[in-house]
Length: 359
Image (cartoon, rainbow, N blue to C red; front, side, top):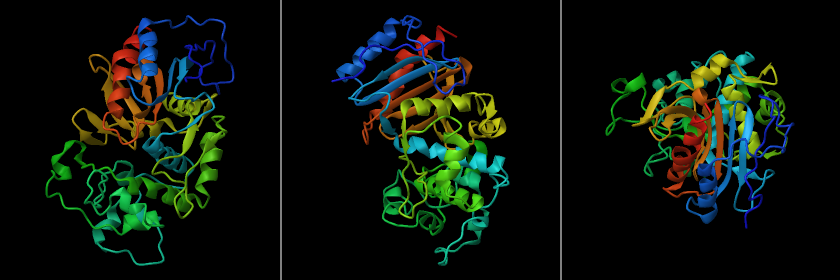
């Protein structure tokens, strides 16, 4: 039922390489009872619908395991984990001078043939940063089925950026106002805002976003086998869903951990990544948010900080700077409230305790 059931250890992997050099000669570099136990529990289904677990430390892939009929060539739909691609696209557009700053107003870029509904002067002040932090003044909340901006309503519309632009201004009737909160922002999870970022990049760069992404990120990282998802209007879907191999997700997060460098080339500025992975808004107790990166701590004592791409089903692509560690956890446990609890436990009970020993 499970392919590649043995724990595979990769050594002699050069930091910031393109996973081109793999040595199978020593399979005991990280022989740990906890990881053996973890593998057994995943195979038994204790942690439901896990499809892959990859662990890399100091630029070496130490652990790679696939489940549910997947292997290293399988592409995974990690849902909203690929929202973070909007952050990387924005950073690259800023690096190359197409966008001046994340403080730029979104309506300096967005153009529509029809008038914007719920016209309000305050909309003119919405910035790209507001979209990246999910803290704009638009009434948009995917966690509220009554919200005008709920993503399920957006999916029925062809022009997603126009859907976002047409939303009314939200009231803080049941929630504290931004000035009353840490970091001065109020977060409501808004897929429509994340989707709109790709349209801003498209207009700013005057290019097909797919090509901009391939040229400036995927090709330099040696990522060649993937499936991009698009909006009904044909723009790259930064609401989520594009499919990549687990090793390629690992490359992306490893590049971030290496301050934007890969093979001695600066793919993305370190300043942008520092901004993106610094708290900008509080999501809930114990969880902050940067620019479409989730920020929290893991481990038995919750003492190891990380930033992560994350999506429905328990999908996580994580970097732990103090351990020089990256982890990919993919799963298809969609719309299950326990899904993130399962992958959280894999990190807290198994992965972090083991990797702390090697720090």
